[in-house]
Amino acid sequence: MEPVIHLESVTKTYHVGVGVTALDDVDLVVPDGQYVAIMGSSGSGKSTMLNLLGCLDRPSSGKYYLGGDDVSTFSDNQLSEIRNTRLGFVFQSFNLISWMTVTQNIEIPLFYKGVSRSQRHRKSAEMADLVGLGDRLDHRPSQLSGGQMQRVAIARALSNDPMVLLADEPTGNLDTNTGEEIMEVFTELSERGRTILMVTHESYIAAHADRVITLRDGRIESDVMDYKADEHHG
Image (cartoon, rainbow, N blue to C red):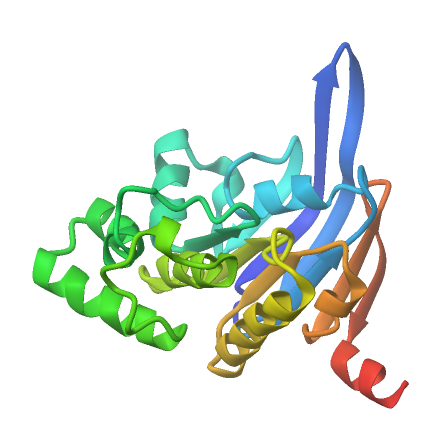
């Protein structure tokens, strides 16, 4: 079966006066339904990797196959289409639109896809229910807690039924208890078969994933499967 994500000898170099190699000859295969945490200290390459996986940037060399398509060769317009149809993003800062209701925020990706209003409403209500916010559809972000805002962001990321859910430090702006509640949402999504890649610098957050990849100086330093089992038995 075709892996959802396949990085083949991917290198990313930034030219800021001198060349800085952020990712160095990285190979990665992620099968459908896997829950992967990406860890590493500042400057390890994890943000660069997330940008490449999210089609926000292209590799300097190597190939990136997403669902079997070599997206490293795609045009800007094609990458934009991929982001809108195959990828869902969850950010540390929620990135909700303040004057929109929960329903309207969740519907944004569907609006850009040209989905009809009635279908958007039905889908947004379904996604809100999934993350435990079915009773908050008409609230605006200012009326929600941090944890509730992140739930809206997760629902929005899922609304276009993405191939991959990408999360960048999703608990970074939350207290520990609220962060754990959000991780339970991700665990439930994983159990439903979602493919999730999450960047975090917290090992207790990474421990929720099936597989933990640690980057160092742009290379994969370790790649641990059954991380949860190891944590549980350790």
